[in-house]
Length: 331
View 1: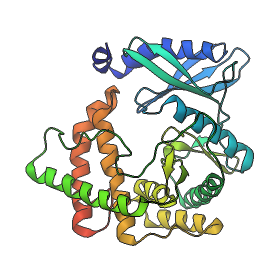
View 2: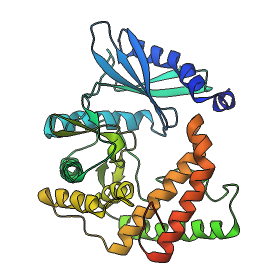
View 3: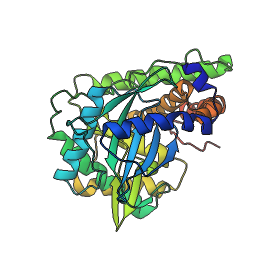
View 4: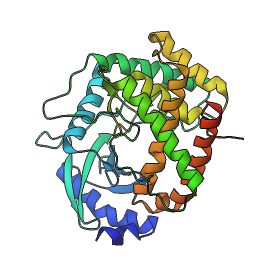
């Protein structure tokens, strides 16, 4: 059954998921006047509007590795951030019987999907950051790190440990098709370097919850404030990892953007102490993780991109190995 879903077009996959979203809405006690897909990528998010006009974001974990325990922690953390800080986050919704998430049968995929719902987050997407928004991202990140340092996981909740480059995902890069011997050597060397840095920095370290995906696609601007959403990738790690992940998405653009993000962070807290070489390795490890995730995806559009993205990943990683600096736009 799942293989049939994998072979559908993007539009067909969305329509196959629509009845799953409707069953999830019912489980959360919501009436549906309108249900439109917002994003069908790693996961699938629908905009749900009730007859009274209230809107919600309904998220299906189509590719997510999150468990019920992870979702409990994610939603509880979002609620705590909204209560304890000035960071704007969507308000997570509970079911009528108090659950943060539901598992809904998805015969179309041959399994169940984990579903969460949150109140609608107003604002314009911050896909492309400028100096002002990059600085705001740094301040927001520092605020999240400070709040997380004093926050305890809720009963029944857990988060994965991000103490190795692929965050615990199955390694599909080692057997990825279509690579030359030279390409495989590049990936092997990158993985060995990343493994060493993660093991050295994360061994016996005190970890805290991280968003672990702070980039423009997960940010909104509203009334002069930055809002953060999509905590599905949250896990336990070191603050330097969050900073490196955000830096990954800024590499290849104006270097002033990363500098502004760092300056914003430093306004509220000391920057994480990490050697330049180690930081660049953590930034480059993001490329390994994303290429690996694309190989595992069942989303039509992402599956179509996987081979080309893998070749791009090898090019970027080779440049990092040769120069010591990671960029998403190697010469």
